[in-house]
Amino acid sequence: MRDDIFRILEESGVGIPDYYKPIKFEVDGKIGTYNRSRSGCYFCFFQQKIEWIWLYEQHPDLYQKAMDFEKGGYTWNQNEGLADLIKPERIRQIKLDAIKKQEAKRQAGSCRLADNIGDVDEDNFCANCFI
Image (cartoon, rainbow, N blue to C red; front, side, top):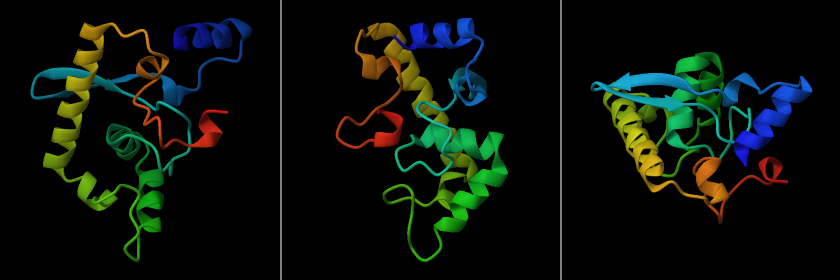
C-alpha cells in the first residue's frame, strides 16, 4: 500500500517528501535505515525512538527545539528525556533495536498495513497523520 501511494506521488510529479526517504546507518557492522514513518512534525508525540535519533542526526536544530520543550520535567517519551536519548551508548542501542525490528519484518513478510507503514501503536497515534 505504501509503495502504491509513493508511486502515485512520484508519477503525479508531487514527489515523496525527503523525510520519508530511508537513510542508511551502520552500527557494530550492521546496516539499518531510518526515516520518518508518519509526518514531518519534529515534535510528534508518537514518533519512534529511532525517529528521534534520525531527527537528532539529520536536523540537530529541530531536535534542540524539541529538547527545549522538555524543560520543567515534561518529556516527549515516557521515562526518558531527549537529553538521555542522545547519549552515545543509548543511540547505539536504539539503532541496534531498529535493525532487529527491520530484520524481523523482512523475514516475516507481513501483509498488515501497520507493519508496512512503520511501527504504529494502534491505541495511540496522532489523528493528523491518520485522517
